[in-house]
Image (cartoon, rainbow, N blue to C red; front, side, top):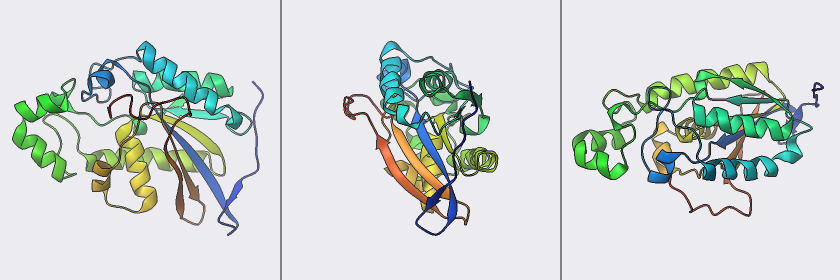
Length: 231
């Protein structure tokens, strides 16, 4: 594959070089279909089901106009994100690399359980978790801890790919944390966002320190945004 190059884009007419991140959530797995908690490498790490692969194929086709400007797809090391990254990278003719910073939050004892099941088995813990980003599920990871990891990954991408457009295949929580960071909102804002499987969110970071969200939860016109659950 020949190396792709493109001149850095400019943001807001200020002359600031722009690094644009195209954040793709993975397609559905057995846990997504059941609306169950599904974490990172500490869980059972399910693959995409056929519906999920079909969702990602539609998204990858939608992203094909980016092929001339995207040379790298960065993936979470979690299987469903890697499989999503492989499909997208194949469609764009880009190389695929993994970065642990973009793995999903670990849900510990809640892994594989639905919201209703967690509410029944861990009512106090769930209530506390929903109101405090520093609190982790039993045996899991808090949003505060995940933010540090995700922002470390973000810093690596922004340094290595300054002025480029990069696709990142990841999960609900890391994408929400990147959006909250870009908008300068509290981490608790993640509880007010919802992302569909195989959706696309676009955030640009400027060399002068500013950021801009350009798209949130975008889907090809053939996709129903309410067809699948939030996990």
